[in-house]
Image 1 (cartoon, one colour):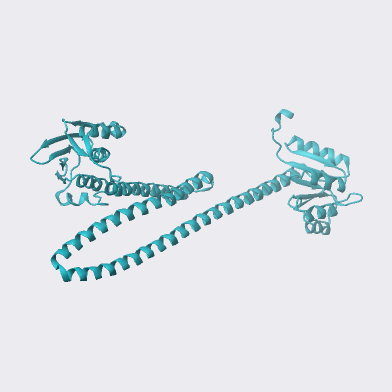
Image 2: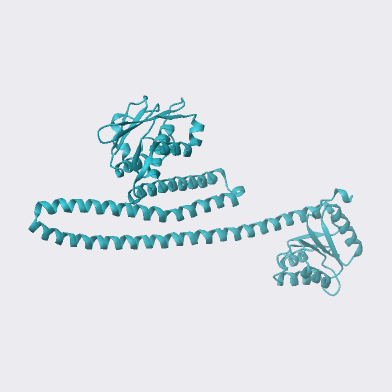
Length: 430
């Protein structure tokens, strides 16, 4: 019979009765059903047993010498350690007054003797189930409180950072206002001396200052946004992992949307940082082999090339004075775009270079989807996209970075393309 019992008892039950026959009967039947009973014969022993090792449930007789069942129950309910233990009275007293008194002192149920053991088991199982559910609810409430506390902490941090950003914006506006006032005074003084010369000089200075401030602001703002986005994504993933069994499919979808949105925003920030670094770079130009630059770009894109079954070829390319790392990025962006915007057929990409009087003319040709004429100028502008995220992923910064690299090297960039006929990107380098 022992082999049929579960390794872990269904519950620890304390049986309190001054009749040995009742104790033996209840102990045998409870053990047979997989419970772990403990038996005592009076109220004092019951209180000591509960304090030393609180049971999951108590079966308590009313009529006992020295301390009756009502008094035992009152003692149990007065102590924090034992007040939550469910107590079921089992008694031969069957008057309504006795039952009312039992519930008044804190009992959860009342069974009259002689009892049916199946009824006792049903009552025990019901109250143990209720007790377990109450415990689970308390544990879930604790976890929920912790989650709420964490969310409030994150919200507080975001609010504080927002306040700092607002203050920084206010300071910038104040500085800009002061600079504008000073510039007006300076312009008036210069215009009295050399009106035509000062107008040209002012325009150049304003343009340079605006570009520098824009690049600096983009770099700082993009860098500072990384940490909050990472925090939001990690908390959303933690929420999905910890409460996956408690969430419905719609909640899981919402969490997935949060994580995907954070990932897209982090990609956009990374591209924006890369765009700002092109203009901020002070690395001096050195003699650079464009063949090596293309080879490095192909190595960086090896995974995408293999997945798309792309074929990338190039003719002999020249050595120029430039920034080798930016040249690698230039070719990598153009090859990556050709792989991304492709037909069902494997992409075919070819890179050539020819020399004219002052410059090298580079061409990167592909057999992709092509670009309509009305869109061929604006694709080099930052954040300009011709397709939705569902069609082709991206941030609309890649070609803007290419153009900025070419312009930093003293060249220019354009595209020739027809929809469905592929594209050829041209750029010049001194």
